[in-house]
Length: 177
Length: 194
Image 1 (cartoon, chains in turn green, purple):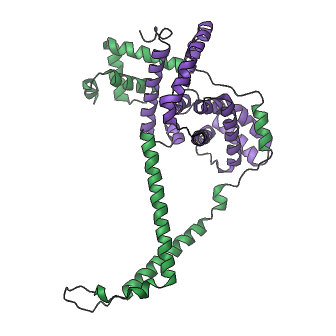
Image 2 (image 1 turned 135 degrees about the vertical axis):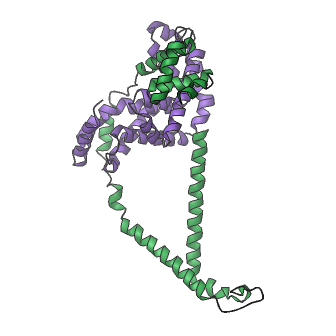
Image 3 (image 1 turned 180 degrees about the vertical axis):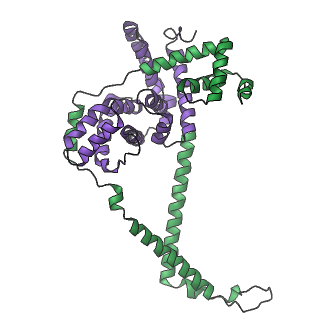
């Protein structure tokens, strides 16, 4: 592994990235040993190391900005008007979530049982299909108000999940950009 | 800065009804929160308003702080989210700021700052000014790493990134800072970048 490090291209970007990791203390032991040796033997690495060390020292010495003198007082005056909200876990009851999940699972299972119940498994057709799709009475299934409501809920949930998925994708894209 | 344990003790007091104890936390973190807000807003008035909003939000949500992370890490997550919302409200995204607005403002302020710099003879002031020239994203990650005592893992948590992504982003931010210093303060950094 150590030898591999030695064989990597020594372009300015590569050197800097490895030296920053070395300075930050995030490089592993093998990498540190290699860089220690490079710093002793290679003038280019040594010069770049001292350059980055100086930048690091400058960054550490950068100063924090201070808000106005009245800042704390202003915050405390505003806080006096509000209350701490109860912890999220106290008002999100897991039993309610479990109940909702149970309700939907039951609905799906009931829908499947009802659907399979409509199929005549003993019927034989020309195509050897267990069911003759042309003879299935869809009106019995889709005229039911509850089934329609169930389908509607599923469509809404599907759209909601699609929206979440696209939002996450957009966020990832923005992060990468 | 005090340890996380002391922060947790103060939070317990506040949660038990001692509202005034929260002032200790505000005093302790106001400079950090204000500096981070300023990196986004580039304007002291807005930064002060946003910082105030952040402390009020943190107070209201204090019961949700589990103590699994440092209070500062939790607080900076609120800073990050509030500042991003602020920028969205102002119809300015961080990337457009990166490419246009900030640099133009920074460049126009350069000559005035240079005169001030000659007086101060301060490399620290030069670094602060160069950080202000960066995009909010770059300035934030540099501030979190160097001034807010956050590890790369904690920074990743604050920004909602993988640790390696945070590491790469920090590296890129430092590279861009170096470019800024070389471009705008070539005389001052001559001894650093010969």
